[in-house]
Image (cartoon, rainbow, N blue to C red; front, side):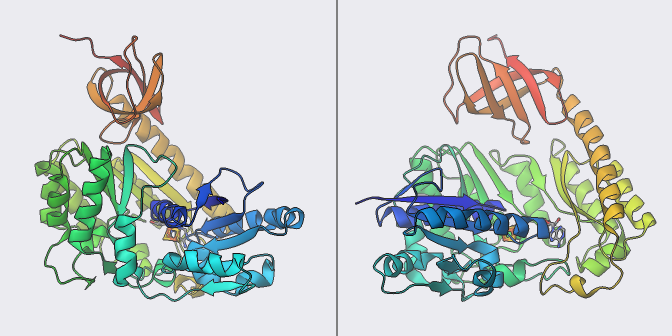
Length: 451
Ligand code: 5AD
Ligand code: SF4
């Protein structure tokens, strides 16, 4: 008999991909995804702990599920992902109704764990070892051979190429929650992308905490292939129209990788290169291992190689000890690079990080004011950047819509709405659109009339 599975995913694309893998693994055990906790047999919360706010959301949802469990005592509630890894058994001190706790590297054990719970062989399950799951042969193959997820994930998919992180930025919880960096074998990655392409997937995003060091650190299989070569191998797979990757550490951005933006046709000229701060003093205390000057040199080189490249970044404001002058340097950097977009955050202390012990914390009001100022400037620049597309013809990969109007994305990831003039498009199709309106978050246009 089929059982209903509800997965709620918080956090990054890595987590989104993990949730898909969980869905695929559990589909083999007869679990069918649903979109509500009400009436589900199993609820899994795939959690994020990157910032304090992300973790608070998890606990507030778990609090709400207490009532659901009271009205349906057979409901199994599990916590997976980074909060599960970080807090382990402690989750149950606050949330005793949680049945199952599964760390970031243990999701392949979910089928047997759920089996023991449903058979009532055990009342509680926990697995939080950090041994990299890529290194576990049955899981490597499961990743590839698991049948496609029963919910359609469409024309655009994520493929995980590495796990963990060795960088130990002083503010970051990831090395603690995802473990040491490990690269997945090239052959497995290529095989997975080939299968996806043969199923009609048009766009692939390669995922890792720091893809620039792919193949350089811990490897599952002996291989000399670095990230630039991996990109070339994946780009050669027939059927793919767009290739993206995330995330990159500026210190490991190599020239061979920069050249890929000029030389690989299907590699989208959109690069997420988190800088975090525009002050060298702050970067040093963040343990980022690059300077503003070396970052700017790389930006210049990238733009020489690929003039159309759009850069996006991550910024933390209010890092401990950040002075007004440090913050102004971050605004200056934004004015200099003119990022197409930023993800910007107020600093928050995270467990077991070095910066949590720094004593010169910035008051909340100052952090909020700086964030507001940063975001206002970024919005102005995003609007200017989007306005640069006015009158231009762009390629749009359609995501959704009907014969009246469609929505899609340009290679640099701008959202475009366009009227279809009676033509119809399926998700994943490419349309040529002329832009005639630009806002800070999206563009509008019309189909190019045939010559
Ligand atoms: N506080 C605020 N932002 C953080 N990030 C990571 N750790 C913290 C923290 N402790 C941000 C960084 C990173 C993004 C994923 O989250 O900008 O690039
Ligand atoms: Fe959040 Fe980082 Fe874990 Fe992703 S890896 S879920 S961003 S803490």
